[in-house]
Image (tube, rainbow, N blue to C red):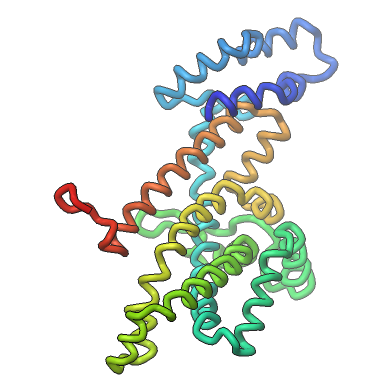
Length: 307
């Protein structure tokens, strides 16, 4: 992945053109190019990058003059906060609605829910974000337009959710980011519910006289969670990695805005470090999913080398 990313990013423009004044002398341009090591062949640049990456050094930003990994670490908490809140909103709203739709496949409420989920998937994120700003910020004046707002520490964690001003700043971007995921959770939960409710163990649970609430909680929910967790784990990675549109619209100071600025300024170290960070994130998320599988489903656990 590092080879592909490094090769592709070197095909997109010359960062020196963005770093120096167009009227600079050729000697000044050559000095800047040498200072950043851009005068060397691409394979030499890649080898230096690779040897540095092995020790945790992904290079210094051309624009900020600071380690790219340090800049990503600074912006990551804001993006993690936004993605986590969006995922919580998606699960909190989508899972009950999906289960209801699966338990009542022919009801009018199900038709409303599924029609709304189609809108959630179809509406572009950037358009919805702009409409939310116009309605809730400009017209009604209920919520702030942009920024992260006031933050506070709790148990050593700095977050916007610990202050009222921070929550007001978080509502719109988190909701905008969550709408597509809500629609996805609804569809996954509905499909899983319809499939599980036809199985024999549900019929036996009903024959034993268990209440519908108990059947849903102890028999239905654990069996539909595994496919939902699989998808949501990957989607959580996409929320973190590709929240660039939402962060740009609401000026949220996270990774997305940092990467957009880096692309505009051809800040190669930031772009390469970000993409490698995303790859590592998805690998870790897949590992976490496998561990959660073992906690939810005893059938996938290993005991003494036997499955």
